[in-house]
Amino acid sequence: MEKDRLELPLFTIYWDQDDIDAINKVIRRGTYWATGSEISEFEKNIAEYVGTEYAVVFNSGTSALHSILLALGIKQGDEVIVPSFTFISTANSVIFTGARPVLADIETDTFGLDLDDVQKKITKKTKAIVPVHYAGCPCYYTKELCKIAEENQISVVEDAAAALGAKIGNKKAGTFGDAAMFSFCQNKIITTGDGGAIVTDSEILYKKLKLIVSHGRSEDYVALGYNFRMPTMNAALGNSQLKKIDKILNMRKRVAEAYHSQLKNIKNIKTMVPPDNFYPSYWIYTIEVKNNLKEKLKAFLAKNGIFSKLYYDPIHLTKFYKDRFGYKTGDLSITEKVCAKALSLPMSPILTREEINYVTETIRGFFE
Image (cartoon, rainbow, N blue to C red; front, side):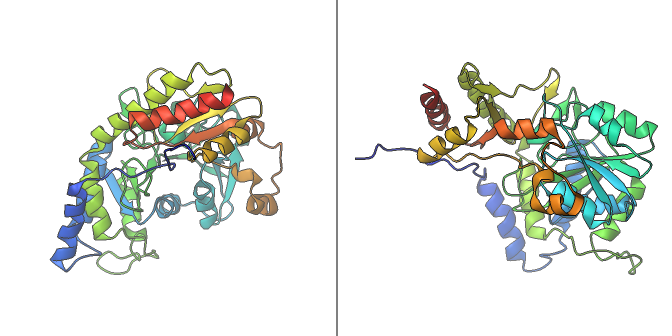
């Protein structure tokens, strides 16, 4: 008889009755499902929480990132530096504008953009840098990247998709660059099912974004825009979720600290420890598996009902980017070495002690 085992997906969503009530309220109203007051309320609440003057919400993080690049005037012939170690939409959003994404390598403390490699890749065509706060931990060189961007008159857009609530010191992710994108996809820190936001202190960018998000419409149709609007029910859910973000962040921190304490002494495992004065949101929990054992460990976990995966496959090694831009293996050596070892474990604010123990004991059992 097969031993009983837990089944652990990569993530589960934290929700409560308040979330259900918020959505039901919009449904029962029977009107303004697409343009309700909950949308502007969510924008106000996001800006207030992050600490920026403005926020605009979108139907996805990808739409949001695409829009801020358009608002910054990124166009054909321009270049935008992004890491290869990120979700593919970070780079794709650059292509949507007609510009070229220049893929850069990462550092090994937070898996964020490497400062030296970025400096080497700045040209006269470079118009923006997009540092990614991997796994919800702010990019190690965030401040330095903003400084060299200012020196070169380049914009900085933080891809803070997974870093809502993360901080360097007392300054929140999303407040370092000219603007930042947050994602509210189903597995993010708070979720609206799908959705995203841009935050900024620039009134000029804010006004452009408000046109781009909804067909270029002000009192008249004054510009070319898109239908990137977030539906009212999603915004209502976002407002409800945002009210409990501090609770969610503390729950995630509890899980991450439990993982770290139980895995740190396993010989072939390296756990990620945030640098001093860095405070992640702990969106995912990624370990490095040494001695070419990652795939065997991943298969062993799957056999025991534990889902794990690499967040993310390097963009420069995808077929599309190889074919279109000529990237090849060896172009970004640090990214490739990290990806060969990195493995993300189940991460959810509602993981129980029993579930965490099951994951770590299964890993320990594999190595022993």
